[in-house]
Image 1: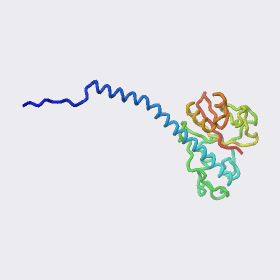
Image 2: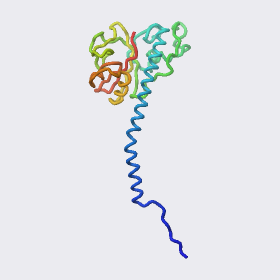
Image 3: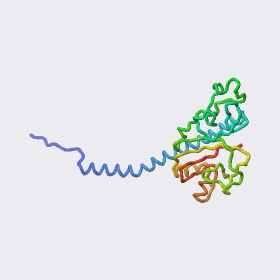
Image 4: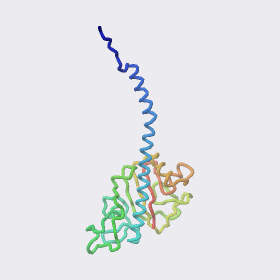
Length: 221
């Protein structure tokens, strides 16, 4: 007696139906996945900013300045903020007390580094193509803040609140998308600025839409 062959596999129509359902689910979930990733990068950056601020406070407590020490041990402004420059603040914060740069006649007596585990211009924390930590003089007090000047407005009036005779340390990021800026701004500058332009120019976080560069205030002295 012959046995009938029973086909228990998927038909072509059923396969198309399954693939269509999968495609719909992917379309619904993918934006959420990207949003979760973006939020995670934002949290990484915000956490790094807090870590950098703490490191500078500890450094200041020992050295008495927020400026990086030059080869002779004198606090000196440093414009590039590139970690590849051994006299940048980012590089000095990660320096070991026993490093050859801090021995002999150039010994920095009160220096007790490292104050920061890592700072690399080429590896920004979460967002951007790179990150720099300049330590410079600010614009004059009361100067209107722009996306590129060294002024930071904390009382939301459009003008810099950093004293003219002070020094300011900030972060500068390249290749930051506007959505990423907005995520960071919503955390660090919540409630500052009532329009898009004001939010881009006021508070701790500033953004240049022309170059996709973001600046974040760390501290001043």
